Length: 414
Image 1 (cartoon, rainbow, N blue to C red):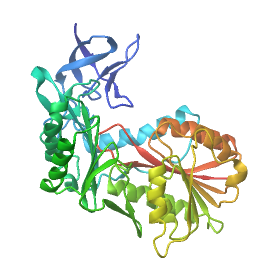
Image 2: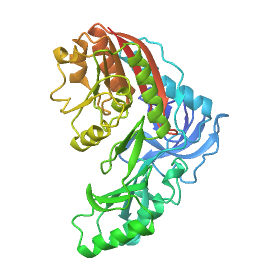
Image 3: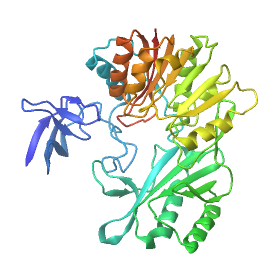
C-alpha cells in the first residue's frame, strides 16, 4: 500500500519517525520535516519503505557513498553534520532522562579520525549462485557487493581485494564466510570464519595469498595459517601483539580519546593504591594507566589477557596484574574493590548490571565508566547513583560516524 507521511523526528536507530495516534511509523533515510511517499514492508507493520522524498528537508545532503541506502553499514550519510551531531548528543541525554538522571553532558567529540581500522566482510553465493563479497543489507541477510567503503581508514587499503581473493579461493567449499580484517602497525591481519576444516591444498593456497597481498597474518577461526610479520598495535608506550580477530575500538582516534578521558578521570583520584580495569580486553586503558599506577586488569577473554600481560612487561610500566574472570557471573565484590583508588569499567553493549551493584556498594572514590550503549549505561548509572555515587560528567564520543552508535565516558564520585 502506498502512503504519504510527514516525518516528525529521528529515532534512536537513525530512522525517520512519523508519530501517529496508532503508534510510530519508521522510515529509513527520511529526515524531520520531510513529506515522503512510502510503501508497506511485509511482516513489519511499523515500518515503511521510502519510495520518494516529496518535500526535502533543507538539512538533506548528498551521501558520500554510492552504496548508501542499500548497504546496512551507515544510517545517516544524508543528514547535515550539525543536525546529525546534535541528534547523537541527544541520544545520551534522552537515555539518561529515561532513567531519571539529570547530568551535564559535554559536547560530542568527533573521533572518526582517519576512519575505521577494522571491518568484517561477508562472502556468500547470491542470485544465480554468483559469489558476492560485501556488507549485509539493512535489516536483511542479503549481501550488498561493494567496490569501496569511504568510512574505512587508509590503512585498510587492500582489505577488500584480499577478502575477494580469499572468498574466491574458498568458494569450492560453498560455505558462507565472515572475513575479519584489522589494520595493524605491521599490515593487514585477517581471520576467516565459517570455512570449516581446510584441506592441505587450500591451506597452502591461502599461505601463498598472504605473500601476494602482503598480509601480516592469516588465521582461520583463530588458528594460524601463516604469519609474515607479528600484527601489533601501539597502546601508550606498550606494543600489543593482537590475538586473532581481537576486539579494538573502531578507530585509532576513538581509542585515544576514550583513553584520554579515562586517564583524566583517574588522575583526579591520585590512585596511590592502584586502579582496576574491568572488562580490560587487550589493555587500551590498563596499559596507559600503568604508566602512572599499578593496575589490576580483569576480563573473561583468555587470549586478550595474555596479550595484555605480555605488553604489560614493557620497561617503565608499573606492574599490571591480570585476572581471568567472568564479570557477569563473578563480579569483583565491594570488599575487593575497596583496595583501589579508581575503577575503570568498559563492558560490552549489554552493560554491567551485576558489577555495577558491587561498585555501588564499594568505597572506591572515583569511577570511570565507558560505554558503547547509552541505554544500558543509564541503567548501570542509576544503580551507582542509588548506591551513593554522584554522576559528575558525561562525555559522548563519536567514532562510528554515520551510524546510530555513540560511545561515552562518565565520571562518578562517591
